[in-house]
Length: 189
Image (cartoon, rainbow, N blue to C red; front, side, top):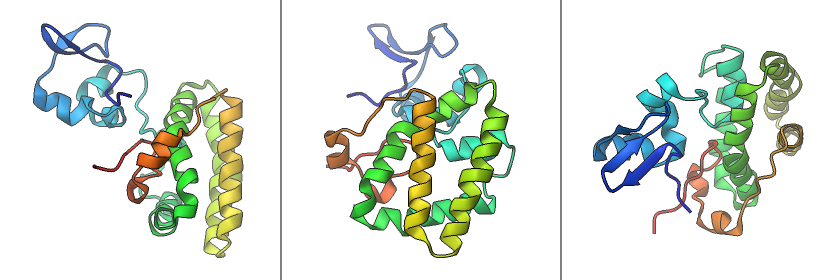
């Protein structure tokens, strides 16, 4: 399974990027920095200029920052990141939740970024999902917050017809310490 950017090609003539429909040669350094892993597209200058959307792969960031225009360090996102980093990533019981976010997060993010009702959807998700999840976390109701998050993710998966699932291979190779970012990362062997 390849994790390279879908616009990247290695051909007899060298490495190319076709994000804008035209093949452009790229260097090894450019490949390693932007193309090697498809989740790094947001930093890619060509993708930013020509790509179909500028989403991070993290649908929560797409909702809060890209669609609603809030700062990336708004308290809601900081609360969710802290919970991911300090609770979910430290407990193997939450491995599947993190893996699911890595697998479906980019697809949800992309669908939401292209949705003609994205502002309304993002507003509803923020008010009915993200804010209440953060409130539950502040009230130390972690399991209830997780259930609400799962419901929100499932609603988006069903609504956008996303059928992706977490493979056993990914579960066995994922790096739980870095999971839950809306991109797949595996352990170094």
